[in-house]
Image 1 (cartoon, rainbow, N blue to C red):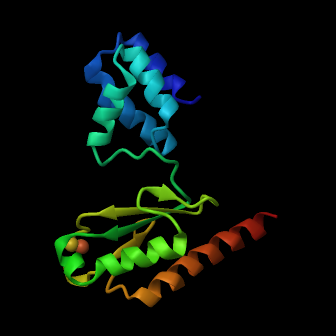
Image 2: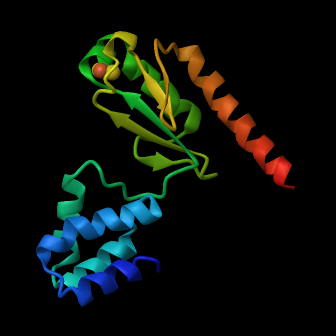
Length: 161
Ligand code: FES
């Protein structure tokens, strides 16, 4: 497991509980998420329980525990976007991708997340695809954007074949 690197670092530095967050951050930076096995190894190295480590990790929204898809879709659920219908946009993504927020599609193409404000409230509701913003979202745009991303990935695969 790649998390071994973080565990070794913890042991070499006589890791303490205060090293937990930096080790979780390093794991996520390297893998894109914090797998269960990494939490186990890090908690062992720091001499704390897995549930304690997971409790701390799950407190912070910056940590994700599932492998991200190739494209991360973020739907803003902040107040300004909410009053402009972001829940309907999120529901359409859930329906079309058949996943819930913080999950990844089985084909590993899409991850779905919610955020609380993207700093462009006047353009709400907003969704981003790998950081690219799409403002004034309408429900019909959801399918178009998903299909555009699918087509892009399919073209990439065909180019490599
Ligand atoms: S509330 Fe959505 S961008 Fe601010």
